[in-house]
Length: 333
Ligand SMILES: NC(=O)C1=CN([C@@H]2O[C@H](COP(=O)(O)OP(=O)(O)OC[C@H]3O[C@@H](n4cnc5c(N)ncnc54)[C@H](O)[C@@H]3O)[C@@H](O)[C@H]2O)C=CC1
Ligand SMILES: O=C(CO)COP(=O)(O)O
Image (cartoon, rainbow, N blue to C red; front, top):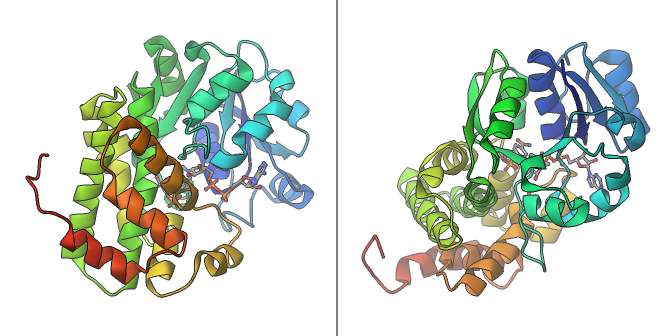
């Protein structure tokens, strides 16, 4: 049995602790707030993020990060992407020196344009063999309900990916290995931006032709940027690319798609942010991914338009009109 620390106890951290517990691991969740940790320890439930889900008995919680991290073989990181750097600055001294750090996050840091594995490497100074990523079509609520799903665990060191794969393989959760950390991370971050655009189309009342067109061109845009950065194109056709894109863009459970839907219905970003506590990573990462595309010399019309709507410089209707009016070209260009 491995000891796994999960920081923190939001939707995905708590759901992933169900996978970890069901797979036979000893799990300690770090929660920011006392009431969340108390609820998990006394009732075996995180009623704020996952009401009605019974957590495995091997899952406990604490608000003390040192306690969560003590003796951990694996450290799972699942905070909002834009806070990771500050969180790690505080947590790094308590992370055991041989523990593998696993990012479940799907975003790119504003300003530095770094992926989460890069932020982890920079702040903790860890070797790439101690940094991994899990990404795939894994909507937290469905995973917590133990509905069957697959995912990708990526690490530059394939042996480490295989070790994590064994630790994360539960009766309902099937992880595949990959060494393409970059492809998995860009797939995960970009699908949130595409889901915002799809949500806007849904909010405007458009149907499946429109959403399928945006999803497909979104995949082309993701693949263009990821391949220009050195990703394996097959990663984008896999669970961390197409798989996650389809799940997120199709599901009313997705916070990013829902955020886009509200923009399509005419709400402003400020109004939407005020209406929820939960993170919709694409609303921030549209800017960092757009900057990354510009720096790489890659055309990124979806990121560009989504960023403009999120910023209030364009309406969702104008975005859709502008997509159609763009200069025509070959599909594979
Ligand atoms: N919810 C989902 O279905 C999935 C989410 N993800 C990714 O996982 C990451 C986390 O998302 P969720 O758990 O869904 O978000 P969430 O909003 O449900 O939970 C975020 C957690 O981070 C904590 N947090 C917020 N601000 C913080 C700060 N400044 N410092 C430390 N902790 C802070 C919150 O207390 C909460 O526990 C995101 O990058 C998301 O894209 C990935 C796959 C599935
Ligand atoms: O990443 C996810 C599913 O794989 C969750 O998507 P949202 O963050 O949009 O809810």
